Amino acid sequence: MNRIPLRTLACCVLMGLVTAGCAQAEPPAAQANAPAARSASAPAMASLPDFTGIVKKNAPAVVHVEAKYNGQRREPRTQAGMRDDPQMELFRRFFGMPMMPSPEEQEHTSLGSGFIISSDGYILTNNHVVDGADAVTVRLQDRRTLNAKVVGTDPSYDIALLKVDQSGLPAVSIGESRSLEPGQWVLAIGSPFGLDYTVTQGIVSAVGRNLGSGDQPYTSFIQTDVPINRGNSGGPLFNLQGQVVGINSQIYSNTGGYLGVAFSIPIDVAMNAVQQIKDHGYVTRGQLGVQVRGVDSQIAKALNMDNPRGAIVGVVQDGSAADKAGIQVGDIITGYNGQPIMDAGDLPPVVGMTKPGTRVPVEILRNGKKQTVQVTVGEAPHDKTGASGNDRSPVQSGSAALGLSVRELDEDARQQLDLKKGEGVLIADITGPVAARAGLQPGDVVLRVGQQNVGSVSAFRAATKDVKPGDTVLLLVRRGDDTRFIALTVPSDK
Image 1 (cartoon, helix red, strand yellow):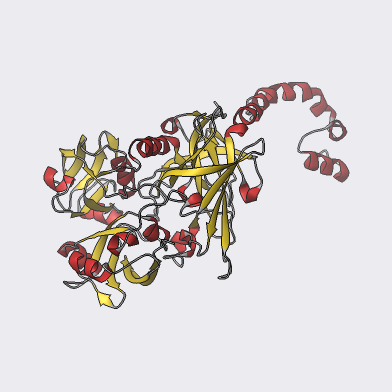
Image 2: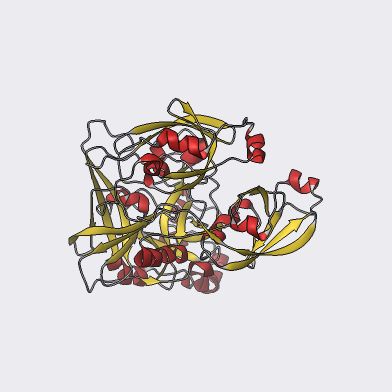
């Protein structure tokens, strides 16, 4: 065996390639074959992408976002509500802010990224970057700082549309996220830790990823290995054509830092929300009116299925689109409008993207037989104010101020949760930032408001009718087998 001197080997390791100095250690046979080896490896090296052109063209359209909060600061989702839940803690937002600021702190700044989507000053970022801010500014690559108005937001998609009073701005090109495939190169530009115009690259690891935390049930994320950290939030994800295909939104981490997995909101979803915000001031979503869970191996065995797939219906809401179409408890939804449904998490995103009133085919298994049911999709409850930040929504009181809507629990749901008659109401939708920041989710069950037990919608409304801006309300909430108290603070109107 030919041995390479240690000093020469160190040179090779440090340089990461065979240099002239390292080459002297090659045996004669290897030297004779070196030109052929270099020639064989040249195509592989040439195929690696060069991102400089994409960066030069698009960096001027990427902005640094600063959101300021005066007085009582908001509490981000990762610090409120279900923060002790390990699953919720893993899927952290990455704010550019101290995790535990002192109570005496009177002003707070959240840092993030964004990008210009049209030359007349519209900018896209994440809702969690600007949620509840008193003032928002953006800094351009040429160091100009502009005041930004929050035109509208959508917490469920984690989208915020900003507008600056400026024209002739550089804008990104919008691509199609649905054409992405695992293995494709992607590139991020943003401000991690406040370091403007940082460029990182990687590949698409997976598409259509449902996080499973319930935090954003309507979003099927793009999973990448692009290194992103706090401050990248809201920044663009580019393909090799220099088109934006996603918005960097979340990381998978138990430390708050990048650990090799990141998630981006598909640009198709984001631009749909942008258009609705421009047209109506809020985002509408389709709704079937069912509660579903995944079909595991035990359920599949009990139902004599060849393999576990689909979403089994556990609850059908009275008068809902599913109820009117004849969908029943125990049906297994295997397809929606031509798209396969392999798991429960696949259903909410495709239903949410459907325009209410649209008639779509839904494929089901009932008693082992395939059927197709035509469903006229309903409309999910939503917050029609749509705006936040420095464009404040009207002051709300009562249950509306808590940012959630509830409905009655049926007997099947009570049995599943081991609840007695007259215990609890089901959270049907998150309609505002107060409940969203606290980590509440559709499907949670509210058992108590303050010291009052609630077992009906009327009881819940009576218990919350006196809630006003500035109040803090304590809820007892059941999620699966976990029951805990959650405090919701309604922002003051001052």
